[in-house]
Length: 178
Image 1 (cartoon, rainbow, N blue to C red):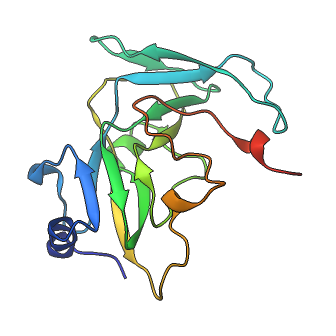
Image 2 (tube, rainbow, N blue to C red):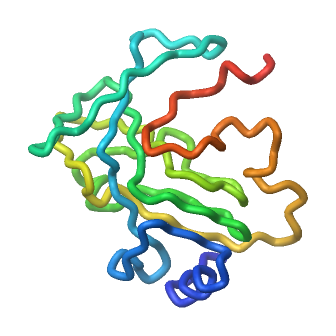
């Protein structure tokens, strides 16, 4: 079950959902719009290795925008810091973003109960497109959890994305054992 706008507001009032900064104008019927932060990153190498720490270069989106290029993976970040203590957050692209040919996540659209951070975006595009810091980039949808959660994400000792950040975070796949 997806939370409605009224239920999202109720959960915010109870402290079960935190969105900072929060703007009532960004609340949709059953979602909350999030915005592109000012930092992007790209991997230093064109060939990535899942067993290695693939380093990234951060850069700031210029005031007059930045043109995304096809065949390049960009890591972005949301302006909004979120906490979700009793629901499963899903990050989806906005239809307006998709109609520009921009994908905001390759596979990581679902957050865990207890995720407390900004969202790193896995941005790609089908043709060159100019983007801007602060533009609406996606929407958060909240699902009800059926049953008690044994271990919240922010309390897991092996959680790889717990460090609070305002910049995109590279893959931590290399920390897995395989």
